[in-house]
Length: 412
Image 1 (cartoon, rainbow, N blue to C red):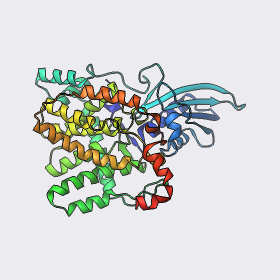
Image 2: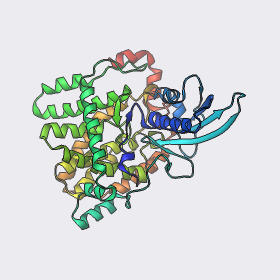
Image 3: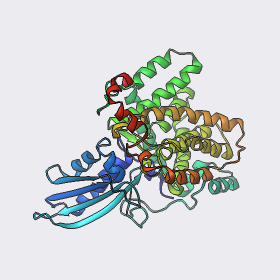
């Protein structure tokens, strides 16, 4: 498996696969042809279908230059290798292309060429020998270690400086989102909710306050992401509110140290890395189960670790977080990372805390492993029709476009 640095990426929203990945690809191609007078970039499949709502074209144009960049949209062509295909071309003055590069944005900001592993000049080599939770749990159990200690063993002590930065960015994002009022960009004119949820939650009794604050924290990050703010992929931009929402709440309500929260992030990272390696974290490839579902699993595992869960209980919490999101479609209205994405982050954060409690009460005893659930998620993603995999052609995206005249009633 790759380094957690490739799972927890610090960047700008609203989408890791549709914004961060294409921007990185454009930077690579520009570096190869700095003097090129004209670029043409063809977007395929999901990138073309929802690219405008995800600001894919803007990310590429900002990188290559507006005057010399042409974007071609071909949503009807869905590459077999991955739905998020891009063709970069360097074009001469006479209109002929003298260099081409086809690359795919495979989720979480990662890039891949067809028939290869992750790009070696972009990604780090494998640093984890094991890539399944069952193997990792066995390794830890034999040595009396926790999951975060396997991260330390595999990555070395330098990973903690990076995860410390990740945690600081996550906390800062929550804080910004809680104080950032107004309307999100895009045709939905969606009003930010996090500041209002936070204020209302503070007036509730303790049991209701807990749930309200978790909602507020997850909303804060998701709304910052939707506005193009600085976030951490966990495992993606579209699902970036779940993990920080849960961990921010745990720390502020229980006064846990930053060191413990960073160890929790490492635990969450292992869960996300296994899902990314053995399954998918791409909504265009496997639906929202691969984004919000995996994020819920990561947050549930992190919470279970923080509260002293065993290896088995932590793995069970992760399994439950993913299992009960199986089959979730990705149907963003207007191609924006707003409806239903933002609300799903808030609900997944609450479900992660529920999974933690359930797994703790069960003392980690369960029948379905996290690894098996990841395999099911991957197969389910293949079976989900493309109109439910980040193309905005089905589900809520289709129904809301039909009821466009009712947007005002729905979003007020």
